[in-house]
Length: 315
Image (cartoon, rainbow, N blue to C red; front, top):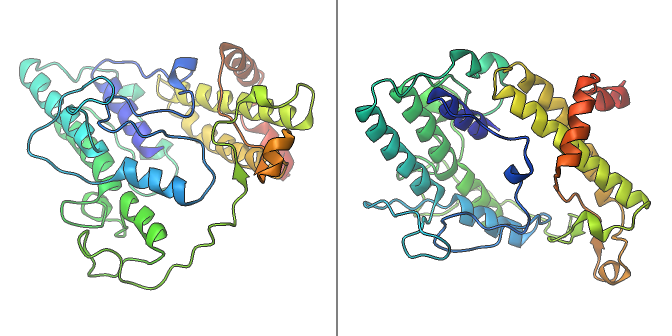
């Protein structure tokens, strides 16, 4: 959520408009990263080796001297890491700022700062000029890939926070079932204490599940529809947060927790398809959004629903 917030701050800083509450914002899974050199499917997988390998592929560090172009599909010019993608954005920001002195002329009241962001690694901060934009890009890329030549993210250097292993290397710890030691490097791999992983502990799910797979009127279908409606409410809150109502970001956090609880309810049910049940698969959220879900979410928020369902359950 921090990276998404900082990207929204960058868009608003240059007069753009973050659009979150729109079916076009939500990808259809399995998905592929746009302009990636390798078209690896990104699916809604349960915890397991395939999910960890996907995380490693997305976050992998790979620094090159020459920035690749934005090719369509499996193009040799495509990006091979998120760091390269943001390096291209960084270069573009610098060039635009040189040509347009008034580039950062967006509405200051649309910026989200630490007062509206929940506590987590890193820190949300307003983007108002080129230095703050470059700081945001640096944080996003290095929290995933790590500092150059290091397994650690930049949080201690940028914010004075505790040193933490970057996302890619956290995935590597799970993959190797071993933690990194204090002197480990990207080249050494993890050499610290063992990290036993039970790869069979998670519910197995269909990575290509759709709401249409669940019979209308069934408990599983009702639960899946409810999940997507609450997901739409979350997107509505985020859209408001990034477009002039930054305080709404705090209201979005309980909705995320509500989604977690709804997902757990779905996972506890066997998949309604007997063939998939025979393969040990369970029901799961589908993260599908249409204009109908968004309309319901808008009505829920206007009626003051917000995070009320979850808070009522916790009372």
